Amino acid sequence: MNSLNRWQGDSAQLAKMKILIIDDEPVNVALLEAMLSEAGYQRFKSITDSRLALETCEAFAPDLILLDLMMPYLDGFAVLESLRFAEGEIFLPIIVLTADVYGESKLRALRAGATDFLLKPLDQAEVLLRIGNVLETRRLQRLLDNQRAAFEEAVRARTVELRAALWALERSKSRFHPLEDVGPLMSPLQGHDHLAGNVFEPRPWFRLHPPKKDALCHSLRRRRAPSHR
Image: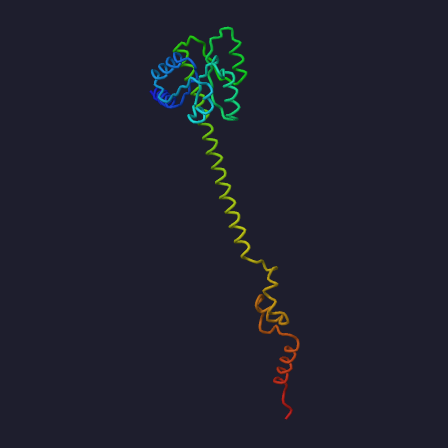
């Protein structure tokens, strides 16, 4: 039951993906549109003038292109090469439509960047199967790209947080000076070493400078000396 629900969910997502049909034959266009509509696809667009391929692709932003090879003005090979050049590194699946049963056109199209191919006359089952497979690959790739983008954004955000925390830590450390760096604080006490010592190292009352200590001892001896009167 879960597998069925998952398959139905994937099918619903595929049905919302956009398909662009490029074919100069209105009959082929109508046939493909009927197949897509019957299969539940809701977002597809068709053009019969291959010269409009690039601007239509840019405006419509399809997830898949069904491209006929034999067309006037610009054939499918020229359109394929221009699309691949314009898209750059973005993967855009393109299924080519050809009546060449000998395979020369298929090989040439695959070398030019075609994702898959369909032989004319078109078979509905094969058409829908290949379209479904290519769109599923496209969907998974987009999902992977979104996850990669989300991961990279999370890494960037975490990096900013760590840098802010490190900056705050360094700033808090700079507010506290170690004892070896208190020289500037003691500059007002220069010339009064006993005062500086009392501030940073409490001393007993009897730790006096020699002149004061000698005077105190002399006074005590005079008080203790016996009287000769």
